[in-house]
Length: 132
Image 1 (cartoon, rainbow, N blue to C red):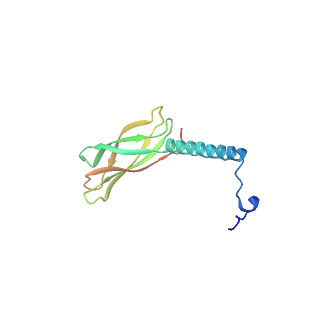
Image 2 (image 1 turned 90 degrees about the vertical axis):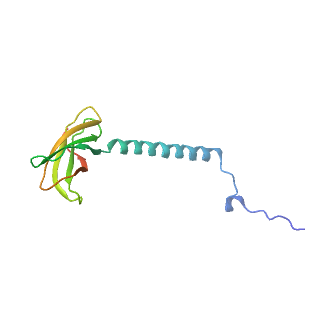
Image 3 (image 1 turned 180 degrees about the vertical axis):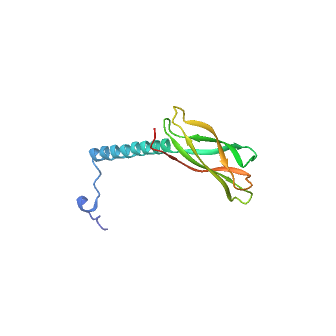
């Protein structure tokens, strides 16, 4: 019969972690989780979403579109709104300036000058401006 070999615990990591180390590990884990939640909350608050709700038939070389913008309150936003033809080629473009307001959601109309037969409107993007 063989006798079991005893390994030095300090050398091979067989020691159980102390209660203090477990507490420090838990505190670090909680701090990382809280920092992640704060980061995600701030990132989602800074996002700007915009979409074309509706548009009218073109008349006299312009198309009127209704645009909805959701952004952080009291932020001035500039959006690039385009009109496209049946082949999705841009035939009109306008910049929409959304003024600062206490509301997150703003709905505005924009006149888009046309250089062709437009069938649809889309918002290519929005960016906050330095004006407040």
